[in-house]
Image 1 (spheres, helix red, strand yellow):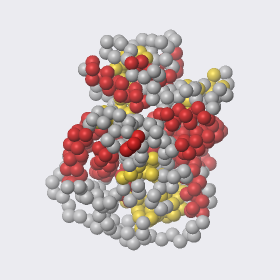
Image 2 (image 1 turned 60 degrees about the vertical axis):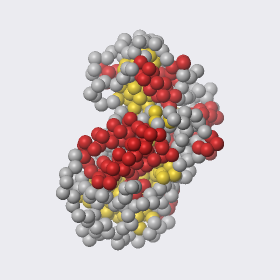
Image 3 (image 1 turned 120 degrees about the vertical axis):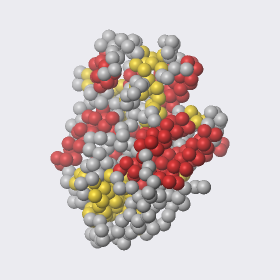
Image 4 (image 1 turned 135 degrees about the vertical axis):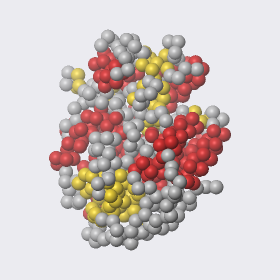
Length: 539
């Protein structure tokens, strides 16, 4: 039996909750949210709501860099071709062309705003990653590009823009009335719940990697934006496509840390437990093949060697080059006694980037009126079935700018008739049986890693679907009072949509590898799968 998905997670009545009114509400403070905020007309009132501190986002954890045609020997057509090639024939060519063509201007804009990219003799130092035909990755602080970009953007947002910023504020649900998004219900531990009514809302909540046991994502990446959009009736697209990064530091008992693809771009090799290099057997591009191919090759090698990881061998790099180019990774590895100048780094794949998400058009408009979206929470058509490395920060910039500008224009022409709407969600009878939320969360993450990880198979997916449905039956109806419960409900909701899509797509394409359907089937599956809520309770 299909579980019922409640429209709203918590009870509320407009007479019992404070109200806040703004022209534009931006949910999420990563690169997409900050760029959207910068594009909003200053005469409008704007509120940015972030789940954690403003500095805590997937964007801030991005290591490798941001891609763009910045070298004279490179061409827009090259970057477009590389993106289309990586995307498994599911990219939207018009969207790819638009984003790639706008990339150089956006990167130069970041520099104008104070982002300090790495340079050599005054020129931008451009790296190369898997799937790229040219050096076109601008990076900062060696391997901390996201952190540097976000530093500069947050500084500008605070100093030059008039936007309000509510940090450590959890967005429980989008508010809808007569089929339109009218803002959001948010929660802060010191202030409780607040209705935020907005003329236009921009969703920039990032990814969902925490649904998997092995992930590079921070703890906040629980798919909240995907879930609240789904409950509100927006269409989600391509939810079977989760990109697994091939090289995640594997130390038993430690959190998983990303080992940037740029290391392979500098010459590092992948070897198995016996020291044998194996990537040339899988692809002529070897270590510089796209991420889906490298992840699948590593997974295959781990299975054949019955070893829990493979290793990055940095010996081909010049002496001292590794520590100088990748200081953050060097420090992280040193915590576990690994000297990257001479020791191999143990790595294995981990969930990294959610390709699927809210369906948006070229300006970030969703299928739910008054709701816009940008960044990892979306499916824009740029990535297809597999994202090309370092195109994610780029997408956040371009789509953040488009969505911010378009939402701003829509808000400007709407009159200031601010009012609360008659929305109510009634309380349910309280459940007396306590739940161990962390146990369910851990079980879900392990199940998703086994059944919907790098390699998938129909029977495993069906069994996983049944387990998730069972959890949904007794977790989703509950009305929790804090983020631990809401996050679990969001994770279950998104996992269920992902599993359903992965089971439906009976082929292998991009990051979606079905061992029972190992071939790409363009005749039947060169199309996008749409997920839209149909069984939710109406309130």
